[in-house]
Image 1 (tube, rainbow, N blue to C red):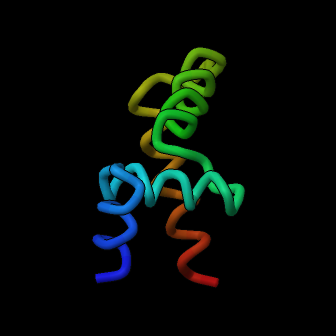
Image 2: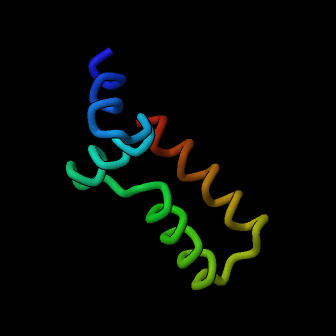
Length: 65
Protein backbone atom coordinates (compact mmCIF):
# COMPACT_ATOMS: atom_id res chain seq x y z
CA UNK A 1 0.00 0.00 0.00
CA UNK A 2 2.82 2.44 0.84
CA UNK A 3 4.41 1.88 -2.56
CA UNK A 4 1.13 2.66 -4.30
CA UNK A 5 0.70 5.85 -2.26
CA UNK A 6 4.27 6.95 -2.98
CA UNK A 7 3.71 6.28 -6.64
CA UNK A 8 0.63 8.49 -6.67
CA UNK A 9 2.28 11.29 -4.67
CA UNK A 10 5.35 11.38 -6.92
CA UNK A 11 3.31 10.87 -10.10
CA UNK A 12 5.53 7.97 -11.10
CA UNK A 13 4.85 4.33 -11.82
CA UNK A 14 5.58 1.71 -9.20
CA UNK A 15 8.28 0.39 -11.54
CA UNK A 16 9.97 3.79 -11.61
CA UNK A 17 9.86 4.01 -7.81
CA UNK A 18 11.39 0.54 -7.49
CA UNK A 19 14.11 1.32 -10.04
CA UNK A 20 15.00 4.56 -8.25
CA UNK A 21 15.27 2.66 -4.98
CA UNK A 22 17.56 0.05 -6.54
CA UNK A 23 19.82 2.75 -7.94
CA UNK A 24 19.87 4.52 -4.56
CA UNK A 25 21.09 1.29 -2.92
CA UNK A 26 23.77 0.78 -5.59
CA UNK A 27 21.98 -2.01 -7.42
CA UNK A 28 22.17 -1.97 -11.21
CA UNK A 29 19.09 -1.05 -13.18
CA UNK A 30 17.74 -3.47 -15.75
CA UNK A 31 19.20 -1.34 -18.54
CA UNK A 32 22.62 -1.28 -16.86
CA UNK A 33 22.51 -5.04 -16.36
CA UNK A 34 21.58 -5.62 -20.01
CA UNK A 35 24.40 -3.30 -21.12
CA UNK A 36 26.86 -5.28 -18.98
CA UNK A 37 25.63 -8.54 -20.51
CA UNK A 38 25.91 -7.14 -24.03
CA UNK A 39 29.48 -6.00 -23.37
CA UNK A 40 30.43 -9.38 -21.92
CA UNK A 41 28.93 -11.17 -24.93
CA UNK A 42 30.84 -8.94 -27.34
CA UNK A 43 34.15 -9.60 -25.55
CA UNK A 44 33.62 -13.32 -25.10
CA UNK A 45 35.37 -15.86 -27.29
CA UNK A 46 32.81 -18.51 -26.36
CA UNK A 47 30.07 -19.76 -28.61
CA UNK A 48 26.51 -19.58 -27.27
CA UNK A 49 26.64 -23.31 -26.54
CA UNK A 50 29.96 -23.03 -24.67
CA UNK A 51 28.72 -20.03 -22.67
CA UNK A 52 25.56 -21.88 -21.67
CA UNK A 53 27.54 -24.96 -20.60
CA UNK A 54 29.90 -22.79 -18.54
CA UNK A 55 26.97 -20.98 -16.89
CA UNK A 56 25.27 -24.25 -15.98
CA UNK A 57 28.51 -25.70 -14.61
CA UNK A 58 29.25 -22.63 -12.46
CA UNK A 59 25.67 -22.52 -11.18
CA UNK A 60 25.91 -26.16 -10.08
CA UNK A 61 29.22 -25.54 -8.32
CA UNK A 62 27.80 -22.54 -6.48
CA UNK A 63 24.64 -24.36 -5.44
CA UNK A 64 26.55 -27.35 -4.12
CA UNK A 65 28.46 -25.24 -1.60
